[in-house]
Image (cartoon, rainbow, N blue to C red; front, top):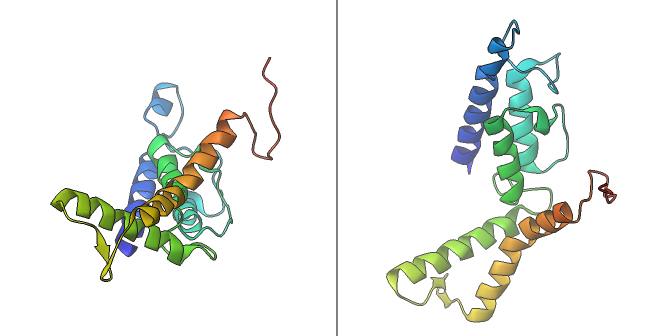
Length: 160
């Protein structure tokens, strides 16, 4: 889990430090994107803060994740989508990790052609169905909310 965290921090910092090359073509003095970042701390600290808060699911924000570059914004969104399993979210770390372990055991069992087993117990169909529901519940809920047109405060937007 720490390896995932270190790679994510490095990718976000690299993406934000390199910025957007199109800024220079438009006549800007720098290609670094400071929009939505905490100006007291700079780009690197804001990038680290974004990865830490999305990995731990604490809800604190010091930079707008939507203002990051494409890769720099994808990593925090990915950390939210995997269910905060890097450090364990607030009250949700262990079950998130166990769901991914059971999913990996199921896929490994399919690949070698045996009935999946975890801790000496065979995984039956009911356990696999619960695992699928647990792993796909959060992304499906986010997609349904987005398709319904809800904004950040939960209100439905009216499209003209």
